Image (cartoon, rainbow, N blue to C red):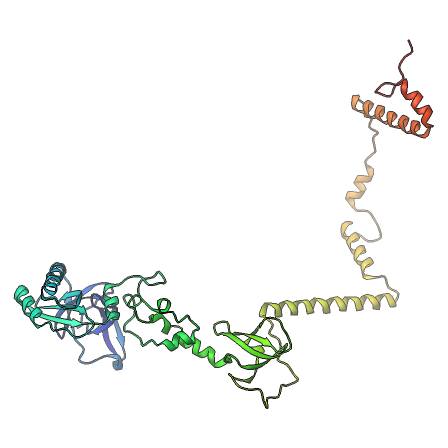
Length: 408
């Protein structure tokens, strides 16, 4: 095991191992490290830790020191110098009429070397440009041509998902991506939908490729001849993530039905003829979700308990005993009486029996009105029982209240 620290340079997401050289460095601190091009200003992303010797590229370069205030000021001056160099280089490119696009300018820590990154469609003769820049900055000048992926990584931005670009956030190196991955994942082959900001295929196509390849091993291909719980048919489409397939049944004119992978018995994988293929009489079992399986087991338990209770009731009735319902009622009545046997009333019942009933007289205008209303209803019923002619003659001599008017 070797003790190292992990360091990340500006504008990159890849980490490098350096020898702490006896220093205790914590994550987040800035350090000065020794590189092939001289001392560099970098940030420690992981403090002192041990790694296997096989993962260390030798010779392991040391850490010079922890960055001081003077080192931070020097780094800020270099950033200002880079902005000035970017503007001057763009003017020189326009003056020489070169077909190149300047992307970024970087200066090493001691200012002895300046690197200009650019993109171009083909090769560019920039020898005159290098001489002009060397006369202006009086330092070593280096021009590097990079691709569109490196351009997107240096500039940064947002992807179609709304998040920052993966290459500028956490990807250590670019992964090879092919159009076959988009076909495997059943994605649209429209270039605008599967291309990133750089114009190349999106790096995230590689993330789920292993999961799709594993699902393809368990699922049949399109147009395969399979046997289902409802009969034989041909697969019209396959959903690898859900591990489901739509099958057009031979004996049905309905739209294709969806089946799980465990419900399919592959008789012919892929396109081909059905000659010589025997369809088995036994069909695959239908898939039951785990929740439905638990519910079915619970219902079976309840049904078995109910049938066992009915059997006990029939046995008790055949032996001359009382049914279970009556015994349960008797138990409930015993529970109300406090558990006393022999029908003896409990203490609260005895106290209630000692209370004498006192007659209560209701008086007042409200009772008188109710009595008068009852008399009126009885009189109306008697009138309805009489003949219509007599009822009409008597009704002439009555007022609205139903009472006879006094004769004048």
